[in-house]
Length: 171
Image (cartoon, rainbow, N blue to C red; front, side, top):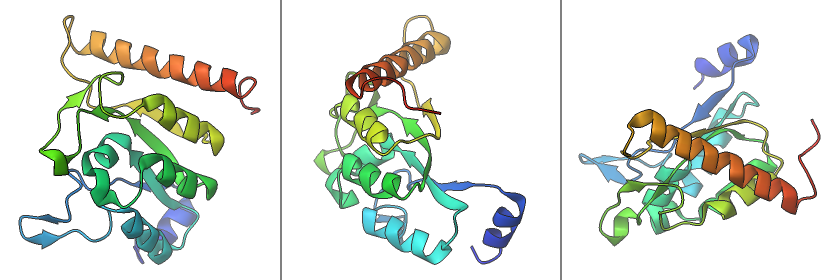
């Protein structure tokens, strides 16, 4: 990070750190202390200490980790979003957390987490970064049909949350 930070700042490049995938504390006997928990992200961003180093929040990874992550995804968004450290969001849902016996990536409206709560938390912190579907499951009609379903669902959530807040945010 000591070598990357000055180059990112000088070039005005923003680097979003993605959670470990899968977000398990140890993988293949190697500890993963930074990107598999809320406290790990706090430490990582303190070490980076740069406006150009932030987070690529993979909601699916966060949900996969469940209680291992130390905080609920909405708490994560409220904490880091208030600091404007979430640069982009991979928006996906899973059937259940790893500690409950594994997970399957699923449709946004078919997982264990209410994605409206995630979108609402992003709006609460005035998130203005990139938001994209991620790891869309198989669907009749192929990848493009599944991607269209997810993008439509995301757009509907954005509209619903903006309506709750009295309209679209100001640019």
